[in-house]
Image 1 (tube, rainbow, N blue to C red):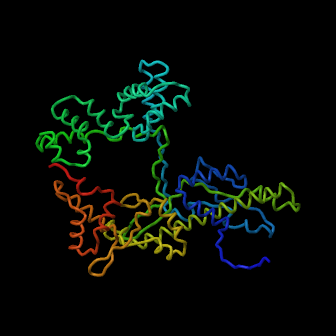
Image 2: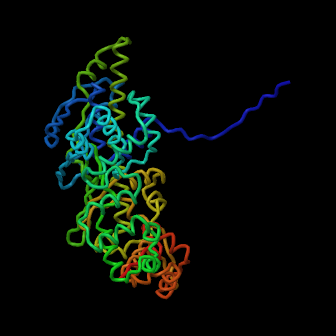
Image 3: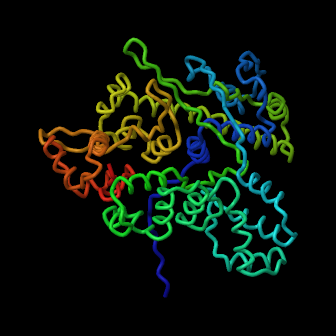
Length: 464
């Protein structure tokens, strides 16, 4: 016999506006502009958008009388001008866009002037297409042979592919098309005019690359029978080579950072504004409202109009709430880190986690995270990703807490001033920090060093 049960459970379900708000909050201004353009194109209920003249919105359009049933359209949600409330200074930031020359195109041009038959030209073109952003071809040669057969109907061999690859290795920038770092810098060093130091450099790369990468300098000197000064000169030549000759962009659009916020310091006061001067004003289409208000019949056309009006109202309302959320969040962050923003001294940054701001502005931590991870702020001290100002705390021996950024800066300073012949180990850094009053363990020093992308002591060693 079946037993029936009734279970009660609480589930949080986001409203359509909350979902849309979360999506809009994640967008930086440039992507927001694209989103607005798309919405205007898709929804005829939104009008009066001039993408050619963003800074001259019509603020005086009158709206007609409305029936009580649709009075919710007769309010601030009918129009939205980003500049009315949030951009106090009316800052005009350009949105610089540039196209860079494609290295792929350059390689194709160099290939086209080579005296190659059709088959070898096709192999070369395919190899160029395999070059990654750093300038390397990481695919297995045998796989390339198979692809040429199945995708291009070109029957070839590994030897033929390698023959064409050697031709590409003579293209500029030198090192392009290499299959690993060793081959990349070996191609480049072989292009240099030969002398004693260059020949030693070639020998190091070809026969002692492992010792070089691990900085086993004494072993290199013993095996090559050279003194420290000669080794230093040879390594100096190697360091001039480019480990990433590609720097490819393939004619992709390069978009510069446009700050989402601007912070000014004037007479000891902080002035925060949202950079929305190039975002247009949105309004509800008057004709759509009139159709909805004048018709008493329900038909497909009326349903379509109402759906579009509802969607337009939701979108404009979400934009309003987005700006309010962003401004309140950044204002809370600025107030929390007021000492830093007044002085620019990183040591004034206080430990601050997402929960601190979430509690202050009464928002979910995930919302604060979306703002912090995708928005930039321009300050008198530079342009920063908002999450830069968040950090965990680190205790001191006097019982006070400081930002772990302060500790990281101390680690950076120690490593900058260390003896490069005998760099500081993580244990030695820990001891120096302990002397300065910071209660920190060696593993924490290691974690911070790795976060800063600083290699271990042995790999920082240099020949002076």
